[in-house]
Image 1 (cartoon, rainbow, N blue to C red):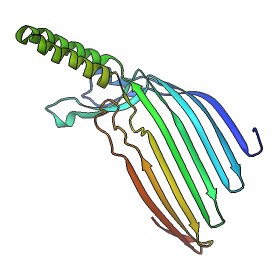
Image 2 (tube, rainbow, N blue to C red):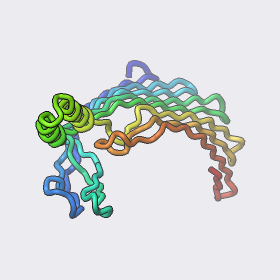
Image 3 (spheres, helix red, strand yellow):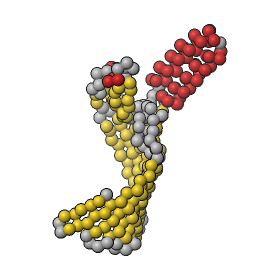
Image 4 (spheres, rainbow, N blue to C red):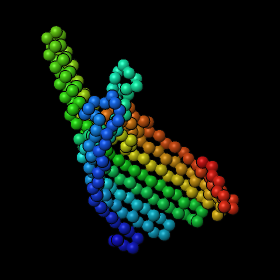
Length: 240
């Protein structure tokens, strides 16, 4: 406590998520199980309050080894029932960012609350798909097309597929359901002891649904919410 109304904190933590078994019968043997994930967390922040104002902010960094993520795959192109969701291990992952919030009470009847979150997150998916797509396409298209079509097709299929699938799609990707920013601001008004109104604006950045398929992502959105509550004796009614 640097002062009576200022609190600084910092901590370090380690933890893990247990491994498990994927039950889908169409999965390959190497996809039937996933290993334990270990993570490390460093967080620091401050809390400050004075009279009718409360502020807090924190910075964090998390590192994951054998990060567990959920992905999907069409296991059999001829069988629509063979589309599977399953868990797998990435080589590693990280995320860092900040979280801030504030409460401003202007009177006994009126207050404003606000939050802001910033995040950067990425996972290292490994080199397995790099070998499958990069080397295979290089061998199949590079040597064969080089003989039949010349150097032009060798460059188009060999190097381009090697770069696109190896370095971009299969080596790393954004962490699923991890928007870069989110925020909210709400206005709260109490008409009397029994009635109150809350109006809120909230928003969130776009995010991918599956780390291994970064081409599918949501759109950023902003929402306007309102909630009115009224108490009658021991019964509280609300309209959202």
